Length: 296
Image (tube, rainbow, N blue to C red; front, top):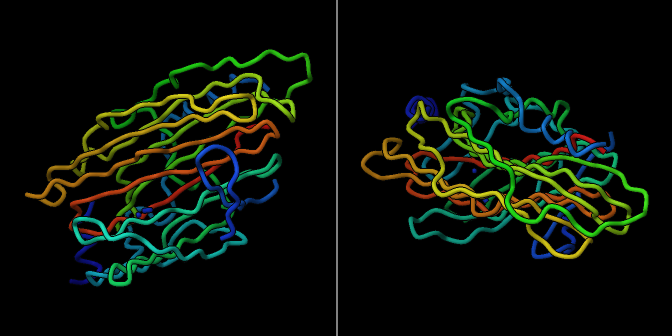
């Protein structure tokens, strides 16, 4: 079946990694570039921008291999390609672990996206780099296909007399089809005060989006919670599980975001990692990740 026909029917997943805080492995990618209320900037966009390439065919699919045309996607500077091996899923597809992302203080944004999926070999290639325009990607929105809640759990940590700095940012995971239409996403937002040796306070929230026009339902269940202990780092972990009964009728399609986690560290480093999967899809999806610092 031709790529154009696949696109007309449709409206991805899972370097040099350093094992750091808690239970997530992080890779360091990024480019250089005060007040916890700055978090509202992350989650209050009213209208999403149209991403470059959205609603045009950006990938070819021959039934087993998905190849993305990078020239039709937003430009990434200093990009690297990371190949990963996957595990065979029950429906015959492959599940892949995505590169994990990190931004030191002064670094602004980094994006990872699948550009090649070979289901025969069960391998995928990710492109990782710094976006020329961090806003050229699906935005946090307010509208009928979105939701947002404050993270649950303990947000106030140990008091300290030391001088603090404030940082904020977000980590987003989303899925698109070969026409580069965003099907759904989950985003974790965080703002934290840090001293260089301790995180003294933190706030956070989660955001969700689903393309109801192509049959996607609101996430159920979903959650956004604080995680971590001690003052070395704190996490906001957001989850969401989407369903679409009509996309590949009579088969129901599922998109699972089991963990979309953003971490603020005591030294001001911003980290992001996600565990996602999908099943039942008769058309190919490819995955994207974005870690962006919005202040500090």
